[in-house]
Length: 134
Image (cartoon, rainbow, N blue to C red):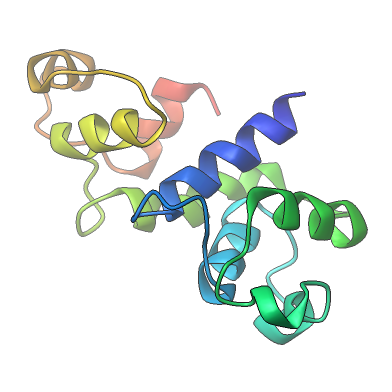
């Protein structure tokens, strides 16, 4: 299922230490970044995660909460919410593309990233949307 793949890939990006766990703050970033209701607070989400796991949330915890609360995903807002997390000061540069590929266990060289970005030295949000056809 594409949604589950999106959620797991986003989780992996936010799991910077690669432990398979994130905290409540990162879960909220993931929630908003995936286009769910930004008015749902960290506290609102935490009610649905066992107290002893607030600092060690697993992908399955995320999927469980999303299945309970995740109505109304605004897919058109996803990239806009995630862009600041995956870019450098509003510019998506080749090294950002290499890092993003690595976060989802893909291999990409700097040269390949530069070729993908093309003549520009970086992309803005609209450039990335065009590239991804979002």
